[in-house]
Amino acid sequence: MLPKIYLFSTDKLTCIYPTEYLLSNHKLIVWQNNPLHAHVLQFCKQWLTGQETFTLQTSGSTGKPKTIHLTRQQMQASAKLTQTALGLQQGMKCLVCLHTHYIAGMMMLVRALEIGMDIYFVPPSANPLEVLHKTQITHLDFASFVPLQLQTILQPSPQGQYYVNLLNQMQVILVGGAAVSAKLTQALQNLQVPVYQSYSMTETVSHIALQLLNTPQKQPYFQTLPNINIAQDERNCLIIEGEVTNYQKIITNDIVQLLDKDKFIFLGRADNIVNSGGIKIQLETIEQTIEQIWQHLNYENRFFAFPLPDELLGQRIVLFVESTPLQTIDYEQIKKLFPTYFAQKYAIPKQIFVLERFIETPTQKIDKKRTVETYLQTNSHKAI
Image (cartoon, rainbow, N blue to C red; front, side):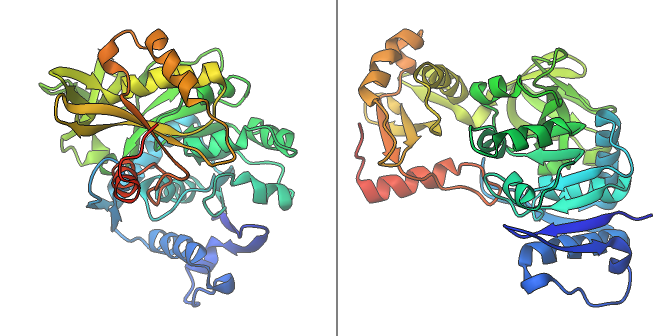
């Protein structure tokens, strides 16, 4: 039997579609012409009727968005790898709470349709479990989140125990699309359900490697899925090849440490290396140190490090912090802690810029470049 599709709005279960309906000649009727629901149903119909190629755009979080063409065979190969790696089975209930115009959300639909899992589609939001609480959903088996969603779900709230119970009843959870902070990783240790961080991109049809973040079996490295070949180029950046890439070599900008033929540690992006005063600095290393300061001060605010032009150094490292006027952040205390946490003086951010809201990509990643450009244009380089 084909799975069912449960479509939720922001506050209720809107409708249920048997997938057999999508194979009929009936015109798709969507409650209140919801465009997110319409896209889910349209894609499912295209998949079920055998469409062979699909066109997607990358999210644009690490560069200019580009168009990618994927084949049905690539997507089926990816779904099969995930099914094997995570033990997904027919009849499971699959939560889809990511944008289905992009690879992460689209592949959740493909996995459900290929394996035979019921689809529970909730519009993407900071906490997609809110609507499930309102509609009294008590059981799901599989979900994929971005880090911001999991971080929001696990924050203390009146419904917090419901959220934790719903997560713990799942068989497995994926988290990806952005870096998982040390604080979120620590919070995940309180969950019983296995949570895997994914290494993924549109060009590889979602993830090609997983890292278990919690449970006694947690791993300090990414492990590739079966039949994925990896190597490094002269920059120490990851090269990927497999059926999901049509056996074409995908050369990434991700600097890694190879531990084995199927294991690696992600170190940072090659385009995040900054030359400041002749010294090369990896921005991810700066952000990892800031995370330690945030944990010390118990701050939740989002932040990122970024290079700005500097007449003396060529480039200087600055820190952008997201904070509303109602949030109290002691920036002088942060600056006092810099020398304690940064082993090298040259790595200390030279300025702190504060703004109320970061600009995000459609997939809820921070659009660092646009955020910086917009802020500097409107605030004339005001800094703390």
